[in-house]
Image (cartoon, rainbow, N blue to C red; front, side, top):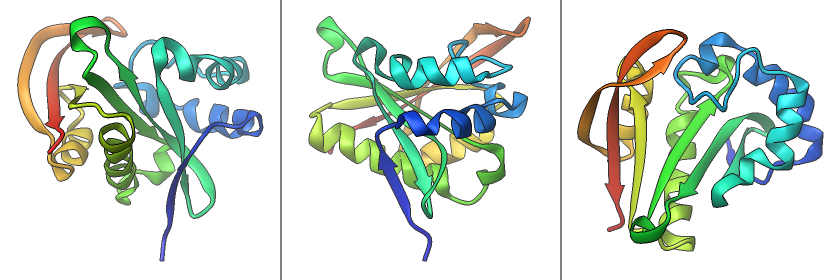
Length: 167
């Protein structure tokens, strides 16, 4: 049976992180703080500080003992302090195997049960239907669509905002 584990990043993850993340298909629908090309220096920064910026709680995703991607939450502030943004990515070789669905399920439970958030939200580039399926399998629902919200690589994208409330 396959096993998924979420764990803290380690300094020893640098090479593997750079190898998985240095893929245009992986970065295509991610925020600009996830660069392409993705270098060893980017991986060093991410593990040392980037994965913790703004109070983020970020985990390495392991599948059968191998580091395959990342999942995390970023708490919001002020009157939105009961809310966190959630995001995830996997190395391309691990797409389509249900790993992201399991990782999102575990991280959502951590956010609700261990950190007490009342709502999680995930902004998704409109063309990223694989991510939409992952969210919907985890009972996230479409709250709304922000038209022409993001420019990435000189293209404009609508962003679909998915959310889930603590039950």
